[in-house]
Image 1: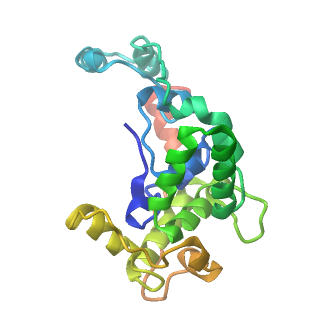
Image 2 (image 1 turned 120 degrees about the vertical axis):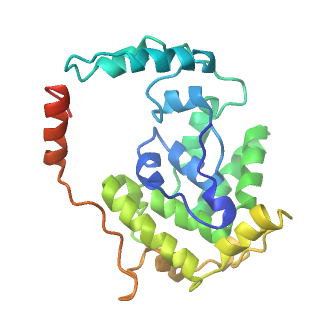
Image 3 (image 1 turned 45 degrees about the vertical axis):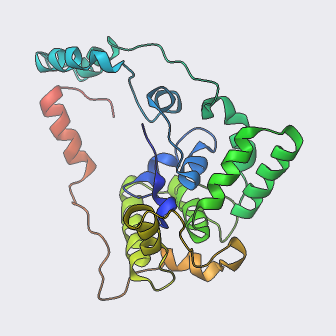
Length: 260
C-alpha cells in the first residue's frame, strides 16, 4: 500500500514526494498528493511507482534467490531475478486506474477551486460515486495544504501557481520540501500541522479545526510563505555533495558498464 497522507494532517507531501508524484502519468500525482488516497501494489506498478509485482507468498523465495544471486558484473542481474517472479496485475472496479481519464480531466486545472468545480460538474453530469467520494476527501483536507500540495507537485502555466516538482531535480525537491516543512512547523502562517496531528493522532476526534477554514480564506501570501527562503537563523537543507559522476564510477566499478 502506498499513500502520501500528509495533507490530512495539515502538512504537504514530503520525503521527495513532489519529485516522484510529479513524474506520474497524466495528473495522477496531483490526485494522490491532494487526497492522500491509497493505491495498492498492482496500481503502483501500473503508474510507474513500482518496478516489479509479486504475490506476498513468494517473498521468502525471492529473498532466498537474491541472497544466493551471483551478479557476475551484470548490472541487470537483480532486475532479471525479480522479473522472473512477476505476477500479472489486475484491478478491482473501484481502482483509480479505471478513473485515469476523469482524474486527468479534473486534476489538470490550475487551481484547487477549478479542480473542485470540475469534480462537482462531473458528479452532477454522471452521478459518479467516485467523484462524490473524491470531493468528500478533498473537503476533509486542510484548505491551505491543498493549495500548497498542488503548487509543490506538478507543472502549470500560471505565473503564480507554479507546480514546482516537475521542473526540479530530486535534490532540489528535497531542499524545497525541507524549507516548506520548517515553515509549516514555525506556525508563522498557520498551526494546521499541530491541529491535524492533534485531531488525527493524539485526541483522535477526527474533527480538525483548520485555519484558514476554507479555500476562500487562503491568500496567495499564505501559499507563498511556504516556498519563501528561511531566515538567517534556519539554514537550508544541505545534502551530500557527492557528484553524479562519482556515483556512476562506483556503479561501474561494482557492476561493470552501467546505462544511466
